[in-house]
Length: 426
Ligand code: HEM
Image (cartoon, rainbow, N blue to C red; front, side, top):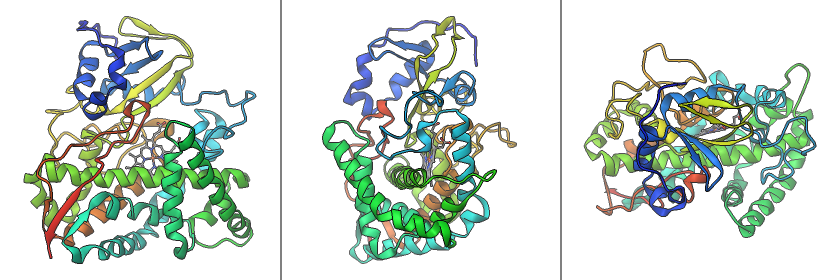
């Protein structure tokens, strides 16, 4: 991480981070942070902010100094007891328990295991498109983006297809449960409990009589003789529906939004070249990724830019800001699916790319690097290229669009447009 001194600019009023203005367009504030406050102490919210590409990248990779967990792994807190998903890997920070849980399942979402599910992703994408293709119009979020990932993940898990609509409802309620307020929380908890009751007999059965599905693999996967407990499996399934469903849904929506409204001149290329959708995915994950921020807690004092972050301080890593850093990318505020300075292929968990280009930070990096990165990329690219192949002369229904926003980007809220209507010739 850089030790360079920085020219201080105008003060930032920390209440801006709670404003609608910031939720809609955080990029001017990101630039101010990067240029003049690369280490920013937000006294109003009692936290620190990092925003430059190499500082965010460095903090993600520095497990000795930045931990994701709020509680100590060996302390009295009962992990999962307060989380709407139940015990799940997101709560475990950098502990050995995190490594154990991650190692049990990480291999299920990459390589041949993932390839086994690819024909099913093609089939589900086609089925979803069949539902609206004769109408000449699609609301991309509700009719397409929110339909494909949840059906794919529940299918991968081997959950009965006739119950798919119920999973879609549980999934929407689980996501709502991550929002603020008691009503949201109760909605999430009710869905979780119903889902757990539903899945309990399936876990029991597949633990002793496994099939080829992902749930069986999760129930029986062993690392050094250790399996996940039944509660850990349930927590993991809830996390998968949400982490795997909601994020990919918003990724698909954002890809179409940027082609339709930010770079309509690049739409033709995407319609005629199915392989280019991998580029659209990578550039979307850089330009305006689904997740803009991740939270960490310092485990020691960290000197940086003539300041010091104290031990046990909360730090926001603004990966959405790092991705727009002109120190890492040329013309960072331009969305360009052909840019030559972004690594467009498969993401790395750590280290730099052999092509010498920088990667986007949209999946995090290091120990908590997204486990579903390969699946999200392939699923988004397949679903979008299928839609592109089937719509004739697609165009936005409304020439003016309110743009992408987020309910609360500041709390890690996922960004996407609320509605996205596309017309096409029948
Ligand atoms: C475009 C879609 C996706 C985005 C933008 C995304 C984003 C992220 C990010 C930023 C992290 C890092 C969290 C941190 O550093 O604290 C993460 C972790 C994670 N993601 Fe994803 N994700 C996506 C898709 C998926 C999918 C499809 C799955 C599963 C099938 C998944 C499962 C996970 C899990 C389990 C973790 C926690 C990993 C750990 O702590 O070791 N994600 N994701």
